Image (cartoon, rainbow, N blue to C red):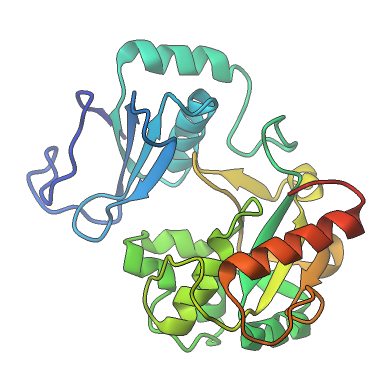
Length: 267
């Protein structure tokens, strides 16, 4: 169900539709004219998880429609803080696209990254498969009570999916935060790099595995390594001087070496 609310929707603890606290069945999208950011997400700890997108972001129309299509497929109650004019413009622009298009769009990266800890990497290699947190939980193979994303207010169903970064430092900040047991966003923090996995998203999309939620490109449940993995970087292969580094340094050196191996400047 979609609920349209006025532009400038502000997250509160109480749902204006039900007059009760939000639960995970609710999610929101806010379109703004801000010049301070392109995409922000969060808010699920004390209110409703919200994707906030500025029209400064060149692909806002695709983001909005992917969000609506994907969350509708998940039977979510959707709050839209978008003008009627902007919604109609996005619908027209979206045309025959779908959130699970079996091809990459011109603005989507053909290689994306998932980072993991060294201990998790050993299990991944044995499975020859990358698995979502909820899938591993079902198999009784996670030690944490909740995934690290829960500290940011991520809805529980987010953990049905394997998330990727576009080459940025964000995936290393996840590893750093997991090691520390709390959210840390310091790019120069000392940590122990795990393994940075580079995947062929072009092939994954062609094979119907990639879905879009308006913010992320992701894969549900599992992703076989032998079919989609291109390269795995650890501290040795990335050329670090020791097993401790910073997210910024490991990201930079891994991406630089990947470009050389791949024969193209992807990152």
